[in-house]
Image (cartoon, rainbow, N blue to C red; front, side, top):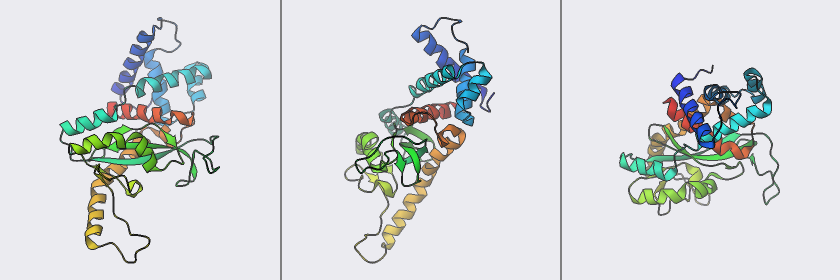
Length: 264
C-alpha cells in the first residue's frame, strides 16, 4: 500500500468503477479490481515506481500495467477543473488575486526540432529535456489549475498566451487581477497582469524607490504561489521526471492536481 490516505484510494477506485461501468466492462474480465488498480496508479504517482515493477508485483503483464496506468490518468485528468470555472469560482468567493506561473517537468530525450534546428523539448533554463506547464495558484499557495503541456523550449509567455491569457481577460474586467513574475513581461497590457519592473538595458541607473517598493510588495504576495507546484511535485513524485511520452505530461499534471484536491 502507498502512504496515501485511504479516502484518496477509495476516491480513485470509485472513479475507475464508474468508468468501467460506463464503457460496459463485464465483471470478472479484469485481472485487477478497481481498488487494486487504484493502488497501482497511486503507487506510480506517489513513489514514481517503475511500471514493470508494479506490474510484476500485481501479477499482470507490463503491457497491461501500462494500459491500466494510462486509463487511470485519463479518468483523473477528465475531472481536472477548467480555467474559466476556476476563475469564476474565485470571483464568487471574492479571492483578491490569482498567481500565474510556469513549471518545467523533466522528461526523457525526445525527437523533434525547432525552426532554428535545436531540440524542441530541450529547456535552456534547466539544461534538460522537459515540458512546460502553466498553472494558477490561490493567494495561500493552493494549486487551482494546470494547463496542457508545451515543449520545454517554449517561453512561459508564449505558453500562457496559448492556455491562460485568453481566460484571464474577462476575469480581470470583473476585478480579479493576476500576479506573475518577470517572465510574463509584456502580457499585462489591458488585462491587468501585474509583473515586476526591471531595469532598462539602454538606460543607466537603478530602479526608482517606488518601483523597487512595488517589486518587493509583488514578490511578497506572489511567493506562496511559487510553492504551489513545488508542493505538488513533492507529494506526487512522478512529476519530478516523467518517463512516459512527454505529450502526456499535461494529463499527468492534471491527474496529480485532482489527486491533490482529494488529499486536501
